[in-house]
Image (cartoon, rainbow, N blue to C red; front, side, top):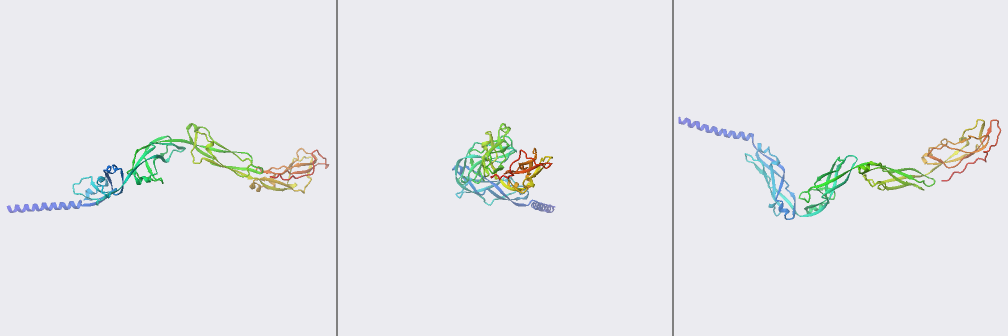
Length: 429
């Protein structure tokens, strides 16, 4: 009986051990150990006052982040993320070579063993003397206001800040500014901004280990309405004899101005006088617009002057050969006939004007004619009249002699009888 009991107990113990071993195998198969690496964990600096109290600043040369490898159960390790680790470097333990060991701590607890390895990483710093100086705050802006609005005055308070940093960084500082972002505003506004360091190229310098006497700058921004004002040029005077004013060109033809609502409500234009008196060549002038703008308005555009060019051109000249047969006769009395006393002579008609206009003229475009209205039988010396285009003018006088007879053929001298026909010379320019 005892032998049987002992045998059963032994079997039970063997079974229990086997079950435990089997359980361990199952557990290890379903939740095996694993290894994961977490990178770019930021290193927190401790006891910075050890450096600052010695009127020094530090710049991190290496080790501002650390990577840590974790070994443990997969069910635990796979739930971790970089935020579950805290990495620190204590500057009170800084070595003679300006290095300090980094310590990494896991912020979560595990029922199983977890191993951390960050490869004995260290933080290396560069120590420098602290330099302090005051800078004027320059206000800059980006973005756009609402249409037809422009920036007025931008006032920073305080407008001077004190900057403390390492000597090497200090040498790079050109100015201190604040960046105001515009987002379609149409009214004055005020905001608080952080000061920014800029180098001479306008690039931002990082503010790590930089101390400002004021970390917040309040900026009041004025927003002004604008409108477009037309520009006119008033040309006076006459060019020299034989020359003419052809065209006036000027730029810009309008400018944008800003001012108070009351000032903008008034009708405003800019009229600029310019004289071409006696000119023989183009008259060009650069005029400051502010001289003709009311004091209540301010020019918004970058262009502050108007460029004026009055084109002066020497009159062109063209001579046409006119025969008696080219002259039309108007208002011949019904009871008379008419003939030219000289049908052989050709008359020189001198026309002046712009060259391209003269080139387009034909003899028939001159509209040469004589008017017999109110004349009776007899001989008459008459001025030849012309219907010229407005772009050209006659430079000489043409006179012809005609003979008018009554229908019965008799010639009766009239009071208007004059001397022989003449063709006067061209009037010189």
